[in-house]
Length: 86
Image 1 (cartoon, one colour):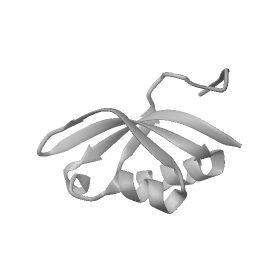
Image 2: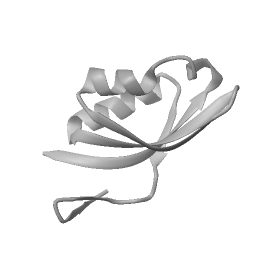
Image 3: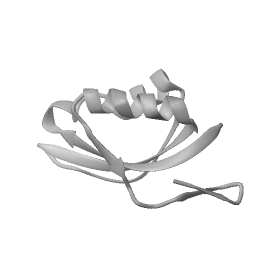
Image 4: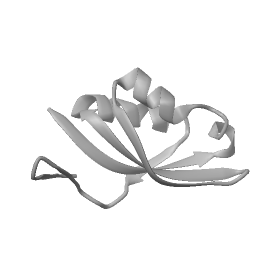
């Protein structure tokens, strides 16, 4: 079942030059939508909405975490066809 999740990804300096969001979408077949971001020279964060199969999203989160990113819920639910999805 397709779901949407809004998450906060926090980057370290080592990951700022890598196309992490692009890779997340391509490798795990999820649609990425940037809601807000703040990038500095040594760190950054992005509020990212992911849409796709729940299993693919979970695998993508595990991959991002294994790359050294911190991933946490952005605390907002996303409406999808009159259903609230966390």
